[in-house]
Length: 292
Image (tube, rainbow, N blue to C red; front, side, top):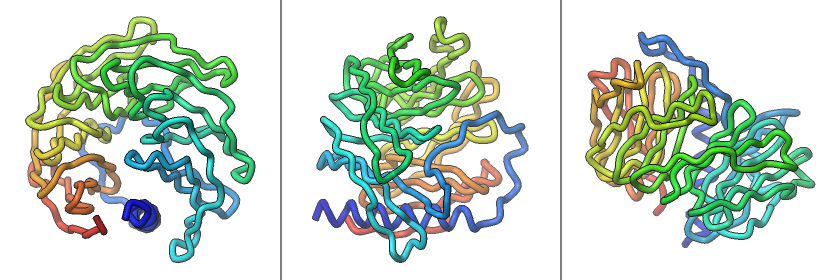
């Protein structure tokens, strides 16, 4: 059953990625877009790779060739010491949040000979990772946000820690701020410029447990457990506040925003597609049931 869940997740994600790339972009929010780093998946040489991890079984990192989606298959497996639960790909490396084993950095060029080249052990459990400007920002559960200098990779090390009240589970970095989904303590906005003085500048209490966050067009979209999707106006960050809530049937665990839609991974109720333009009228427009 667990293996079927992994396979179905890979195929659904692959189809979603192809769908997003094929869809014409809708007009973005009326707010100016902040600079945002590129995120996974990465494409090149005619092959698109989707990285698959599983938090329940501790499956290894599995890059999946998803071109075409109908014949997707695993092209390489890289075993990690613990449980791979989050990943970010940038500059030829996959940065893996590996629960109790911290951050694992994997050289993925070429894919066929991918291997771990650096491990950074940290306090707590690594749940999420985001890479920007030569730093890996890691959501480390009870240990909050850990900022790791990854240039060069071989000497990667923690350069700053910012404690958070709850359990840091997901994060997004944009415009000089790290947005941390801190489970029961909501969303914490951390000023990370300069790194050495990183500190929390705003906390937005959310009704449920914040597991994931995506920032786009001046808004933070928070996957907020049994409270569904919370949309937070973050311009300016210091006065951030919730402007819209969209309830979902189950537990919102992850979110991705593209072309005027928020795609919410809603635990046992599958994928929810939410029209977020305009924000004030955000509503679920499509549900895709996925095998449990």
